[in-house]
Image: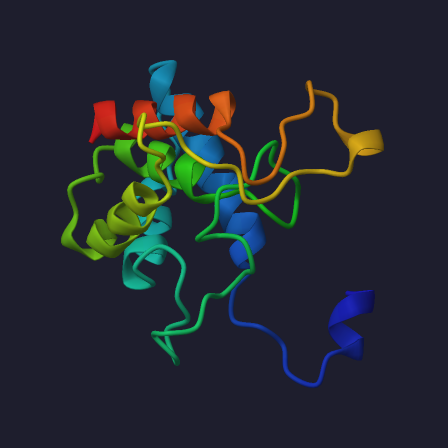
Amino acid sequence: MHRVRKMKKVPKSCMRAAMHGLLLAGELKKRGLYFNGNDRLIQYFLKRRLFYRTDNPTQVVVRGMNEVFFPIEYFRVGLPLLLEALSTLGRGKSLELQEAWNILEEKRDHQGRIILEGTLPLNKSYLPKERIGKPSKWATLYAYLAWKNK
């Protein structure tokens, strides 16, 4: 509430929270559990073609959504994990996601590995450090899980 009072315009939704909700819904489905808000959450992302604003369909809502970022943090999740969650939820073949799949495909190197575009600072990462501009085994894993579930 404190932050809302400082805003000139109250946002209609929170994409950052929705991204983490999508990841949760995907993990729940893998464990055979159903999240009541699945359908609305999926439509929320499909309506935006995964990461674009509804009022400006060429502008990304949250920086980094269309990039390869790992490990995730509150502000940035990254394309492979978002597509993996939507694929797990059975919507990987939706036409609204075609551009996102094309973007992910462009991020592969000649060996099929996914190139890392962003990561946490060295002192904040709890995983072994991967380098920006180099292939990422974690991003590649999630991209292949997304393609497999598609």
